[in-house]
Image (cartoon, rainbow, N blue to C red; front, side, top):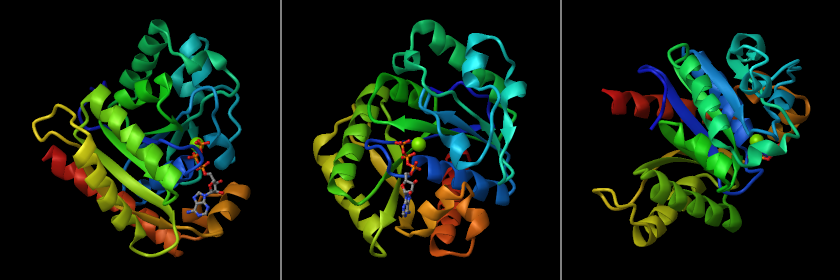
Length: 264
Ligand SMILES: Nc1ncnc2c1ncn2[C@@H]1O[C@H](COP(=O)(O)OP(=O)(O)OP(=O)(O)O)[C@@H](O)[C@H]1O
Ligand SMILES: [Mg+2]
């Protein structure tokens, strides 16, 4: 399904509902993977509505848009983020990306081909929801991480997203991060409940029939997060020892171990 060379894990960070913390998780997960010695690039795959550069206080002069249009080379637009990872910024305000035509899809695959092999991880910070563009970007990934919060609407939208991924892309495994939990253990409980619903209602046509939800961990709700976002700093730099910081490190470790086990 993915186009990268062996050795590069392409991981889409996506969600059903918007604003649940994908970009925050993608940026800090990247920093955590760097701390573990991995080479990481985060691609702002929220094409047309980018904001990863804002979270990371980067000032791109050109973006993926110019690369796709053929006026810049990839190396000219990739930036270095504070956490030691690379960022491929996207542009904002380009309505054309809400529906990707065949030509844009081909060009986007070309970008993935070029990036493959240079990094251990390509993290794709996608937009929210089951729009064509989000699903197409997700289809280029080896692994999917769905971010949800405990809000019933976010869990319902996570279910919808997982269902579409199973039916359209025959995904038999989806990783889950539950962000903004108010009680310790809430993430695992919600994942188990969601797994029951998935088992009951989704038949992906795969040998196992359903989709396995791999719980990567939960992140507490904490004012430190909006503070870090407002000050445009990585939480792993401003508060690495906080509960949120520790949970991000745990999630990165679990993701890396799981992918390593799958590749072995
Ligand atoms: N663990 C948390 N605790 C408290 N607030 C949080 C937490 N995680 C995220 N937030 C808040 O949610 C806001 C939205 O996060 P973020 O931009 O990462 O979401 P997103 O899923 O990428 O949104 P979009 O769908 O618009 O791309 C953050 O700016 C932050 O204020
Ligand atoms: Mg985002």
